[in-house]
Each structure stands twice: as C-alpha cells, then as structure tokens.
Length: 305
Image (cartoon, rainbow, N blue to C red):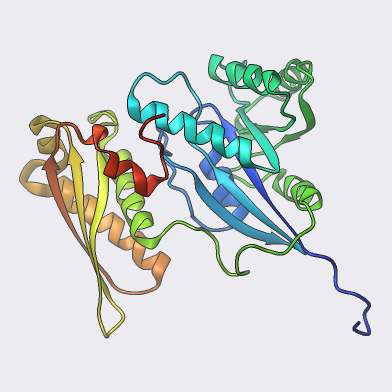
C-alpha cells in the first residue's frame, strides 16, 4: 500500500454503440477515444464492420464497439453488416442507442431497433445526438416519447461533433464498467490492423469525393505494405468496383480523381502514422466482389448471415 492509500481498482468493459444509419456512431466513437479510429462520411451505411475504439477514463478502460447502422437489409453485404451490429450489442456490457435528434421524430429504423431491444429485454442508455442542430422543445419531446418504451436506464443529450455533453456520458460509462483488468495497453486506441485502417481511410476519401456519382458497390483492399529503413512505408491498394462505367468514374478524367483520392489518403495516413507514406492505387472491375467470402473475413463479417 502506498502512502496515498490503495490504488483504485481497475474496471474494463465493452460499450456497443448502435443506431440507425448516419446517427453519428463513428463520430461519437472518435470523440470518446480522442482519435480517429472509424471513418466518417455524410453518407449512410459507411461503417461495414465492428471497429473497437479503446480509451481510459480514470481507472476504467472503455472498449467502444462502433457497429454498422441497423436498417432493413436487402443484399448479402447488408445482411452481414446488420448481423454484425446485433452481435456487437449482444456481447456488450452496456448498449448505447444513438438517435439523431436533429430529425423531428425517430425514423423507422430507430423504432425497429427499440422494438427488438424490447423483445430481447435488453436495457440501454439513450443518447440523443446532434443537439447542436436540434430545437430544445423537440429534444424534450423525443426524449419523452422514447423513454415511454421502458428500456432506457439513462438519457444523455450530446453533440458528438462539438463535444457538448460528452464528459457526462463518459463519466457514466466509466462508473458502470464491471471490475476487472484492462484488456489493452493504455496507449492502444483500436484493434483495427493498420493495413485495414489504411484501406478504410482510402474508402472514406472515395465516398467523400465521389458524392452521389458512385453507389456503395466498391471496396478497398490493401494488397501490400512495405516498410523501408528510413521509416517510410509503401502501401499498395486495389479499389474493386462492379462495372467498367464505375471504374471510369473512380479514375476520373485523365486519372485526376484517383490521384486526388491517393493524395488525400496519403496526407491523412502520414499524419496518423507520423512517417512518410507512398500510396499506389489500382482500380479493378470485379463484378461479384460482394459474393466473395474472402473479402468478408478481414471485416469480421459473417458471409452466411
């Protein structure tokens, strides 16, 4: 025992962040962790797999699970994404349901999520996000309406973007983590392998720069990662699309679009890794990549969901 008395017992647990697409789950995870561990775009269904964001708060280690948005899936990839989200919720110590409070009422996806939580008798913490874009009267109405469902232990009103209300939420989560040793080193912020994170950064740039021009039928795979004596890294990546017309859009006139994507990905990766990065991007047509089980494994998705 030290002169200051016994050290505070450590706590550690998993927090699943679930919600409808574009509720702000990835933005919230990044804000809690204090670093970018999940890609963020204005588009729905950007997150495809469970991503862990790891942070410490006093003696507590919070392992936050960023899940894909939950919606009514129609295709194989969508079914795998939604199954991954529900598995993350089932395995967690605490479930946060994130609801976009800037909308006048919860959308049908949020309502369906609440119905399923009720059906399995799973309690959750309600987090109303985007309060910076919501009217106060509207916030109180949404809170009242959702709390009538009887499954929420607490309600927090936050802005993941500005950080408003975040400290109270973090304090609550830290206090409710179960006693136990930390599962990750204090300086570790995600379990995502760097090769996969690099592919996700490039995919984020593609989503952001291509706007509505390209559907979600693309994926990025890091094929090579070569480290040199001077500390620099050469990363080779392939962007898979389903049709030649999509390949033309990704390349852009004279290859300008793909060069811009590579440049922006390189800049962010250099800031993240604090070393010189060279990114080589190739675009290939692979009509049925969404039916390739090998591409589901790195994301931790169940091909047969």
